[in-house]
Image (cartoon, rainbow, N blue to C red; front, side, top):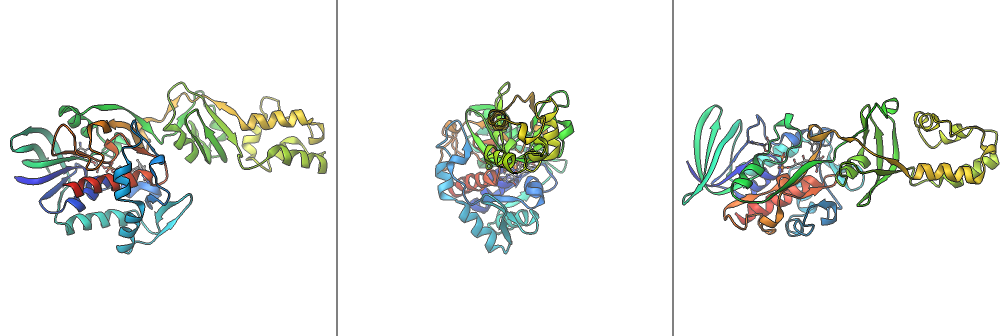
Length: 389
Ligand code: FDA
């Protein structure tokens, strides 16, 4: 079978690409259903974009690479598409847009868009091997157990990253890119919970608190969640993408509260109150108990000198923690690194040294923050390649 364009991967980027590339285009995926990550994303409501998405919200060895595609397909373009399909949506927080009803609506919308454009979609189809010759790309597939060979002028790598292998994630895009001489940067899990040894935070599992979490590269003000195995919650997932093994993170609890002023006031008004009782007005009780376990938070408010209160506040402002690791690809929302952007045109996502080969979405070394940024990159890069094709 001979076609113009073969897209590997019917995820966010692949389907968007097919919707733009149109007729004589086939999308294949080994899964039973398209867009499985879309379906489970955002707790089943899909955080499909972010109103504030901008190149600053992405990690890449070349931070300029994403600019062109993102400027030519913005969050407003995707919002227009969603609205045109009658999908109701709302802003949850920090510009994060979610479906009112179900993430399935986004999958249905993309499948309709690609079919309306004349593209075809084959599921339960795996890739046996890929080669390139004077005819273009020859891809041997196995469709529902039967061999099929497809020759295509364009081959689009849209099989995503390594995150959540249980959902069908594979390193196929990296393998094919390497086969055709494209450089692939080391990958690591991003937007992933931290683990700590020896059940460090087990007694606090389930406790959530506003925090600012920073390292030398970045800082995020969002919720911190203690878990049975370590730390999670939006602030932790965000900083995890900037974290390297062996590094410390700095946790500033209650970044929006001037705790020193609040404690001093209370000392004046209710000096007989226990320090821990007062602290529990600001922080979850179980966290206060954990912080007091070393005997450092003793006595009534009236017993605390300014220096003691300041020392306590300094401790809560700069709590240094060294994760032992992360939960890895098993639960990571994204994969950092991947196909080196140096190998690709930022306008079309086409490989500079291999005309007709394209790479889009998470497989490329562009990784967004938590909050709808990763889907926006998938839409923008898919659109860029689909339009160029
Ligand atoms: P994607 O992973 O979507 O698609 C790749 C496709 O290729 C899949 O359909 C897969 O089956 C197929 N495939 C893989 N290997 C193959 C092979 N060997 N042969 C054939 N097919 C193969 N982002 C965001 O912006 N907002 C959010 O709310 C969330 N939420 C979220 C929750 C969870 C649990 C996860 C894991 C991730 C998110 N994300 C997110 C991230 C987001 O899902 C991700 O960045 C995009 O789906 C990436 O789009 P791609 O199309 O590049 O890959």
